[in-house]
Each structure stands twice: as structure tokens, then as C-alpha cells.
Length: 63
Image 1 (cartoon, one colour):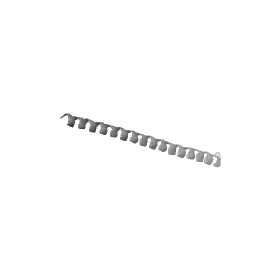
Image 2 (tube, helix red, strand yellow):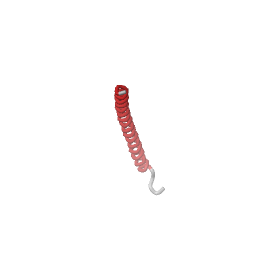
Image 3 (cartoon, helix red, strand yellow):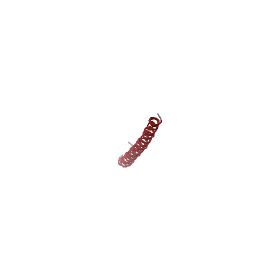
Image 4 (cartoon, rainbow, N blue to C red):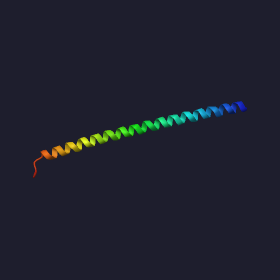
């Protein structure tokens, strides 16, 4: 019985390590994805901000 209990505890420890590794990798994946999405949003915002300023200078005043 001691041997089977020891086996179960070792197996549980390995599963805990594997779970922690997956959690860490998934967390990094989510963080990198959010950072990439934020960068793309900021790039699009900057582009349209610049474009709006250019069109604003083209439009005649008083219309």
C-alpha cells in the first residue's frame, strides 16, 4: 500500500508541475496577444488621427 501511495503522490506531483507549466505558457501567450493587439490598435489610431488632420487642412473653411 505504501508503494501505491508513493506512486500516486509522485504522479500527482508530475501533474501539478505540468499544470503549472501549461498555465505559465498560456499566460505568456495571452499577454503577448494582448500586447500585439494593443500595438495594432495604437498604430491604427495614429494612422487615422494623422489622416483626419490631413483632411481637415484640405477642407475649405466656412462649409
